[in-house]
Length: 424
Image (cartoon, one colour):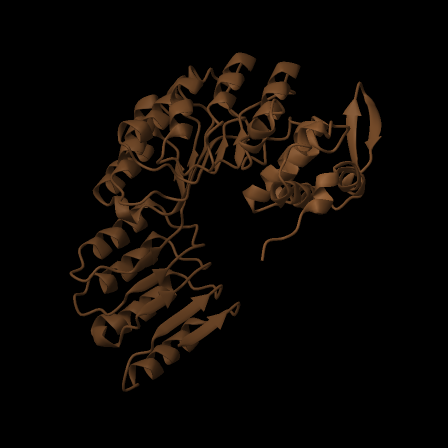
């Protein structure tokens, strides 16, 4: 391998380098010239030698974070399209001067190879100044959906993105054999109900969602998102849902009732970690419903079966109790331990009646004591504090850590505990 990074390479030096590489008995495994100010003229030098000697082409070329535009992409596409070319991987990430024209040339060349490439990385940020440019992107990648970048970001100019364009984009993604990781839209305007139309395509085509979806912008015109819960509910409940982050807070005007409907659809969801839909300080009813979602205090089993995955609800969710549950979900990877900690915090941390434990058999009783101890340990480790501060009526009230107290009470007040002998 030949690797040079963070070094300006002049054209003369690059030419001498290529001559030396061509005089080898066998090709290099890889050539990596990352952050080396490689421009279109330098790419021309490189591809000139490989065009004349395709068998000397390395299996990997990395030209990330350089100054390559559409012209340089065209030179590279000539090498990729050669049937004798041995190139398997190419990375062009960070060459932001390239547009759809250059990407089209290199994708078309890669798609036409008899032996498919293993990896093709190019800039995933696409600029669209007109609706036609957005449509051009969708139509092209509908022919080659496998080459859609895993993390795709659109920057749409001063035009309204229509629901038809979003529907076409969803259908394009449906043609992939696997979902992309992230899809972000930076727009200045979007047609009403466009978001609902886009999300519905994943349900209609029975395909897995991206891990992350964000639609918004710095100065976006706010619109009604329509009946978002009608499509978002079934989507979050679907077995094909792989959505981990959904951000629509910049664009949507979501009512309290709709937010409560959406929250209800998260009861059985185990994938979503970030849900940022709200554009303002939430009302008390929304906070109560979200808190109940994360920790249903009705019974021990309802607490245990609460949502232990969601850990970010956006910057407007500031309620201390709600934030404490979000923090616990975030800091503890083992969701079984999260569930245990919540059960202990809600049902065992304060005064509780020991009478229910009198009738327990000794082996079960010992496991209960262990369960209590484990739950307190997880809760305290997650927050790294000796006590928790809860807000009641606007005043802070210290709630002491009752770990020792609870275990002591159980052991002291339940004589059957001392009769337990571990089976051999």
